[in-house]
Amino acid sequence: VQLQASGGGLVQAGGSLRLSCAASGRTFRHYSMGWFRQAPGMEREFVSVISWNGDSTSYADSVKGRFTISRDNAKNTVYLQMNSLKPEDTAVYYCAAHLHTSDQRLWVECRGYDYWGQGTLVTVSS
Image 1 (tube, rainbow, N blue to C red):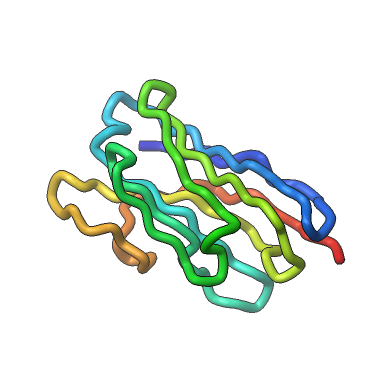
Image 2: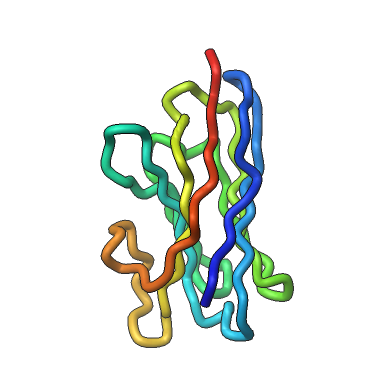
């Protein structure tokens, strides 16, 4: 599966952005989907994950209550709604896909994912 992330940009602190990740192929529903981010000089970190059917989600403590992950399997797309953005949210955001048919865990580690998108830059100014 190929993933294309979009929706990043420059926003002031307190603002909102919605990221999208469009997947190719007909098997999107076979994948749980995750969002990760990587700030300059930092390791890639987990942001959020959603199960293949959208019934289960998980968030990093740093974004809980501000970010919401969702998916539309009919559109082969996963979203990350980001509200109350802070300067420390500045990073390149990546979407990733994990084939859930063999392993139904909601992975929070990068190593659990089979496919990655190219990333979209989010910059939050203070």
